[in-house]
Image (tube, rainbow, N blue to C red; front, side, top):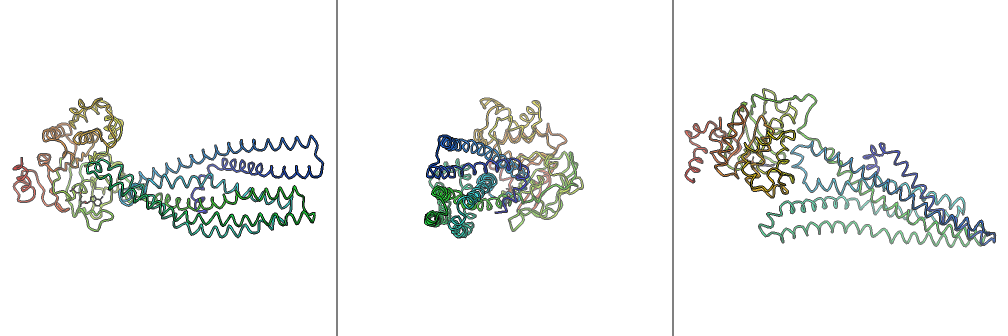
Length: 577
Ligand code: ADP
């Protein structure tokens, strides 16, 4: 349990004044909660002794009316503050978590599923903030209340009766805690199942178009139900443990009541206490029920939050393999990039996807990359984005290993148009400006022109200001590609990478874009991965990648003079036309 408070001790330190205020408020509430029973006892004793008069009566009535009002006001203030603090902590933790997610590399994202990452920042985070604010305060409050009540009972009524009736309580609480500790492992499992369920919902929402197109709603729902069922089943286990709690505790509590009554009557007969004293005492036993139950529940919830804090912390502890060093160099322009014997294996794969790749990219060149699907073309060019470190060999930029440069600087050199387009639910121009938020209108128009996106604007009802649907759902495949190309172009990158980005455009549009690149990107580097040879025909050098290796290299003409994949596929493509 200490774990959770240790982990958020920085927040308690930062907010100690507010925590102190909350604690004071709670102790005042505890005091007020206990006073009516005492006042009632005094009233009864005054009545029994015949000493009642108008001034003592009005004082008692006034006190009994004023106390609930005071309690209400204090509780209101406390609840307000505690909620503000919980939100503050949630905000800070979320900020920490999200900043950390952005610092992580692709290896990390291969390790954790989206649903899991989301459940940690929603479900788990909520458990942590509740534990750190209301539960922590509740714990102190209830413990305070119990001690306070026991103090009043033993000093002002009867210490003997106090001892007799509360001696049984710790026994009950110990039994309960043993059961609760065992429950922990089920809670941990439940959190994992919850994350799986979140992942399933996410997948279905993201893939709803494909699900509907293949009329797979029923089978997908079936999978959802299974995930939900699993979640409920694991929760049932936990509830079973919970069910031990109430009956057992009720019995123990009942015994405490009986003991208080029996011995209380005995003490009255022997004139060791008054009737008012016994009534106050029994009221206090009743009052203690709530706090004792609360403490036990709070302990259990804090226990659960400990699992959450571990899950949350697990992510924060992850370090990115691809990271900057204080000695990392800055770079704005480059002259030459050398791939030297580069081999790369995805983190959780056994065999490399690309092997012994050696080639040079010179500033201003256009490089074409072709080859069968799955040959490793994307994997090869994405090495320039520093998503992962190479497994073997090295990439040099102007003679310096790429790892020695500031990661963002290297990424800023590149304008990458991926195969799957990540479009946001914003206006078209905002989507393009993601490439360079500081771009002016002239630069925006230029990027739109080079990407041959201009002609699409008249089909969009509000031109550049047209809202794009979620994940680009309102645009055609070709429009999405051209918008993504414009986004990469607006930053006027040193290296433009088109990763099979012309697949959804017709041959004429492809020609226009290639011509535009030649015209507007003189002195800049282009890397074009393509299936159609027309897209790479004019490249300074074309690499043919087969099975992760460069099998051929040369200009279009040179490659046509060689026997091999390039010539074979070219002839096939030409005859299909
Ligand atoms: P291409 O671009 O030539 O079609 P890719 O570079 O996309 O080929 O993929 C090459 C191989 O690497 C394929 O077998 C693919 O399944 C595998 N691959 C691609 N991305 C990953 C990844 N993130 N993790 C593991 N394997 C991957």
